[in-house]
Image (cartoon, rainbow, N blue to C red; front, side):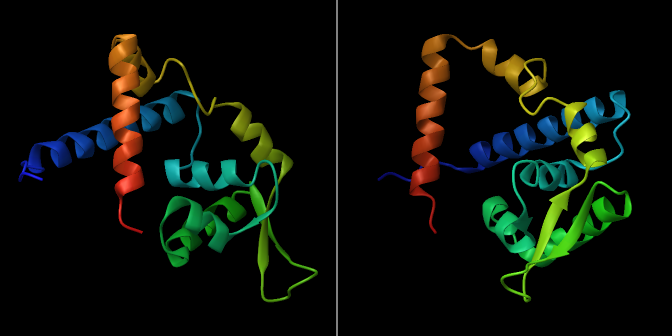
Length: 144
């Protein structure tokens, strides 16, 4: 395999992440939602079932201690609460509250009007498929 310069790709991916985060922050502010995108992700993970911090961390591919401040803030805001696992006392489960569920309803998870969707939809169907295929391949090849 030849040595292709990765720097422009890394810069573009970083820019996409920053632009997406800025767009999400703008949408949160417009909807008067005072949580961070990370907190939103944690809350969304608790929507369908109780889950532990470790399980969320594995899903997000980050270390569990990185999530503790986000969980603390969500709990303080009354959006979720911690609950002891009756089967394993070492585990603490995160349970969304009705207030948390109401907050999630304010922001569609896959908003067709968000910046990333808008940009993606400006690509031709063939380019969309090609981009998806390349990103899937890149993800599969990523070291574990």
